[in-house]
Length: 210
Image (cartoon, rainbow, N blue to C red):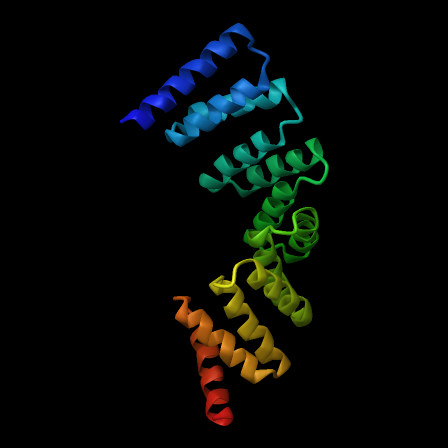
């Protein structure tokens, strides 16, 4: 398998670079990413730690460390590393997006919203952050903001099923039933499991409109 051979060669090259310059954060980072690709997570984590020790402004390394924490269910660790990421680089959208996502996982919707708003402010094409933000708005009953944000998601990715589902719910809340039916149907068409109570409500409105 030439590809695996290429990865091994790349890893060997990074190890040589580190041996000749142990304080090069980029070499540690590159090695860590390659080890991640081989699912050698413990070794990768050590190299990411070395990377930030050598180069404290290497924001991507903090994000990867956060991802490894998330993989083992350590939400607090993930949050902490992503906070270090945004402190190491101003306007780092990925870090803000991850902070918002983790807060949502922890049920901290009020903390998630400002982080996600910053994520999309710094990256206008950050689909996942828009989708998570729209979900947060929905949970807070901010239906207008939810609709606007989901429509932005669909501008970027028209077949994003979660956005269609959330639009259906938000439109139902606002009494815009035809739009709710349209987006609910699209979510179902895309394979999304719409909640039974939403399907039932949409069904009743479909009968009325037909």
